[in-house]
Image (cartoon, rainbow, N blue to C red):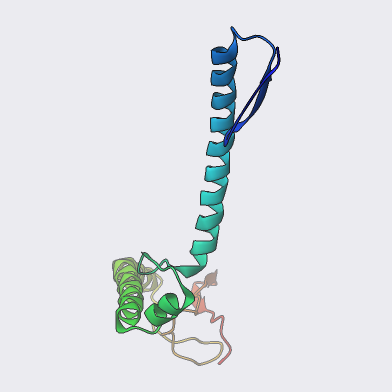
Length: 156
């Protein structure tokens, strides 16, 4: 005797009446797994689509293009953007402040070395006659016949 069982989860044919319950459970379990996989795939696709409407700076999620565009032109979003820029600027300033004692230590060492060699130490580049004040200038010391020569990497 062949029995046909059909529902939303799947279709089943059985020849034995006794194993109906067991076979039904197996098919339900398999169809539940398939449905769960479909739901996960749909949810991941929806997340991918909604990433377009997500503001990472403000950590907000929007459903439509109009909502996300409205947020991008809002005061709140621009305030957060300015606040982030200000934080980055403060980090750079604090980084420069941390480098300041190291620079002072190097200057003290230079003056000591120059006093030992009895050569006056100046903050001036001898090769291009430009003052050594900018960050991009590199100072190399060459010991040649007891004199200290300073070189400047920029040509302006």
